[in-house]
Amino acid sequence: MRLSARSEYGLLAMIDLAARTEDGPVSAREISETQAIPAKFLEQLLVKLRQGGLISSVRGAHGGFVMDKDPESVTVLEIVEALEGPLVSTVCDGERSAVCGRNGICAAADIWGRATDALREVFESTTLDDLVRRQRTLDMAEESSAGRETG
Image 1: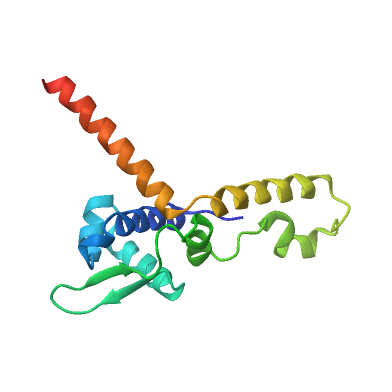
Image 2 (image 1 turned 180 degrees about the vertical axis):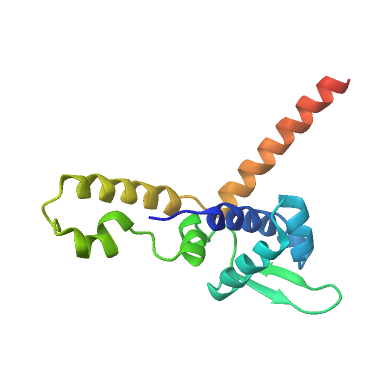
């Protein structure tokens, strides 16, 4: 299982888009600035997310990106797999298993499989809408805390 900056930044971009679904298309520049994602890297992520059927691009002066699906129906797993490929234990399910010679008789394989299954469960049971709501709660708590410090 390989989770990289693609997953981290891609998830942030999707949370940003989902939080602004009512605003219409959001430009890559806006997402880049709001989420502190390098613009060139974000462009690559947006291509993969579009190819994965999660977002669409809108051309024109007021163009940008929009969600293709309701945030309540998009799971973190869908986002991660659109960006990284299938979530499998790369230690025992990938190229290494072909050359290690311990296929089926390795004590470590079970733990890697269980860890992958647990991660898959968390990603599959968490929707984009869950994360948008959580982010709004965190933002309100931060605003409240900042208000108390300056007041």
